[in-house]
Amino acid sequence: MSLENQNPSSFKWPPVAGVRGARGLPSRLGRAVLVLLVALLLLPVLAVVGSWLSWDASALSIWRELAGTVLPGYVATTLWLCLWVALGTVLVGAGTAVLVGLFDFPGRRWFEWLLLLPLAMPAYVVAYGYTDFFQFSGPLQTGLRAAFGPQGWLWPLGLQGRLLPEIRSVGGAAWVFSFALYPYVYLLVRTALTERGVHLMEAARMLGAPMGRRLWSVALPLTRPAMAAGLALALMETLADFGVSSYFGIQTFTTGIYKAWLSMDNRVAAAQLATLLLAVVALLLWLESRAQARMRFATSRGAAGRPVGAPLQLRGRSAALAVLACSLPVLAGFVAPVLFMLRPLFSDWETLPWSRFVQWTFNSVSLGAGTALLAVALAAALAFASRTQASRLTRGVVQLAGLGYAVPGAVIVVGLLLPLGWLQAVAPASGAGVWLTATVAGLIWAYLVRFCAVALQSVQSGYARMPITLDDSARMLGRSGWTLWSAVHAPLLKRSLTAAGLLVFVDVMKELPATLVLRPFNTDTLAVVAYQMARDERLGEAALPSLALVLAGLIPVVLLSRTLRVR
Image 1 (cartoon, rainbow, N blue to C red):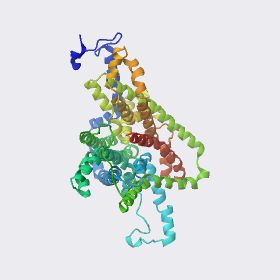
Image 2: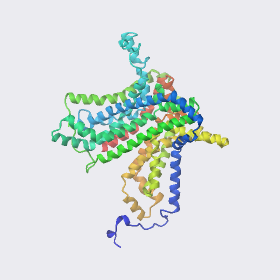
Image 3: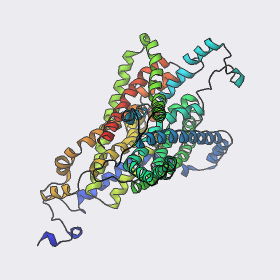
Image 4: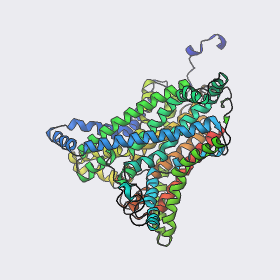
C-alpha cells in the first residue's frame, strides 16, 4: 500500500515489539504515577481550601473578631500597595520598553539588558539597602541634619524633625516593588513592540500620523495585552511577598497569615486568610492567561523570526531625555541598592561572620541544587508524558502542576502544616510531623510545589522547538519509553534542562517565607540570615548574605539577556 495516498490523520503506526499499547499496563501505571505526583504538588492548595470544611461557631466568632479588628486593615493596605505598585511598574516598565523598542539613542543596546538587572535583586534586599541609607539614622539624613541643623529645612512641612518621609511605609514598599518588579512589564511590552511595533509605527508615519497619535493609537493597543500580563505577574509577586512587608511593618495579607498562625496560634484562621489571598492570586493568574492568549493573537514574527523595520532615531534633547529615563530605573532598582549594601559591608568588614557565612552558603547551595535536580526530573517526566501520551487527563495534570508558581509561599506553608496538625491529632504516634518539620523533606516539598512550574515551563519550551516527526522516526526504529527519552529527547533538551535547573536553583536560594518557617534547626540559609540580621538592625552583617543572593540572581539575568540577543 502506498503511503502517499493515505490520510496522515488516519494512519496507524504498526506496533513495535516489546511496547504495550496505549491502553496497556505501563501506560495506566505511568498515568497513575503522574496523578500521584501532581496530587502531592497540589496538596497544600487543597488543604488550604479544605479548611473551610471545619466551619463552626468558633470559626464564625474568630472571623467576626478579625472583621472587626485587623481584616479591614489587611484589605486596605494590600489594595493600596497593589494600586501603587501597578502604577509604578506600568509607568517604568512600559515607558522604558517603548523607548528601547521604538527609538534609537546613544546606549540603547546597553539599556536593552541593563534594564533587566533589577531581576537579580530580591525585593527584600532592595528594602534593606534603601532603609539603611534613607532611615533617620542613615548617612543621608545624618548628613542633612549636620548641614541644615536638627530641625532641617523641611520642618515647615510638618515632618517633625525628619528631613525625608519614612521609608518604612506603604509608599516606601511601593517604591521598592515598583523598581524591583518593573522588568516583568518591560520584557513583555518590549517583545510585543519589537515583533510588530516598529513596522506598524512606520506605516502610521507614512500615512501622516504625528508621533503622539502613533503612540496612542498604534503602540498602546498593541502592547495592552503584554502590559496586562506583566502587571499580573508583578502583582502576584507583590501579594506573595513576606520579606518587605514584614521588615517595613506593613500589615498585608501575607503578614496577617503568619501572625494568625504563629502569634494567635490559630491554624484554621490562617488557612482561611490564605484562601482569600489564593483567590486573589487565582484571579490575577486568570487575567494573565487571558492577556497571554491575546498577546499570541496580536503579535507575530516575520519569516526570519526577527523584528521588522528600524527604530526612530532620537537626537539632541530627546536623546538625552531617553538616556535619563532609561538610566533612572537601573540606578534605583539595582545600582543604588548594591551601593547602599556595600557601605555597611565595608564599614563592618572586620567583624563579619565569615566562618558562618560558609555554612549558610553551603546550606543554600545544597538545598538549591537538590531541589533543582528533583524539579528538573519531575518536569521532564511531566513534559515527556504530555508529549508521548497526549490525552485530556495528561494535559490537565500537567496544567495543574504548572500552577504552583502562582501560589504564595505563605499559602504553601499553611497548606503543608495544616494536614500535619490534623494527622498529629488523629495519630500522635505516626511521627509524620517530625519527618517534615525536623528534616529538609518538608522544605524541599514546599520548594517543589513553588518552583516545579519554573522547570516545567523551560522544558516545555524546549519540546515546542522539537518536531514531533522525530518521535515518529524513533518509533519506526524501535525506540520508545526510556530509550526514546535518553537517545532522542535528552540530547536535544540539554540547554532547556540546564536553564530549568539554574532557574530553580536561584529561586530556591532567594526564597524566604517557606524557608523561614519550615527549615530544620541549624539549617539557616542566606535568605533567612539576611532577613533576621536586617530585622535586628545588623545591616552590616546582613549585607554579606544579601549581596551573595544578588550575585546568584545575576545567573538568570545573563541567561535571559543572551536569549534576547539571539532573537
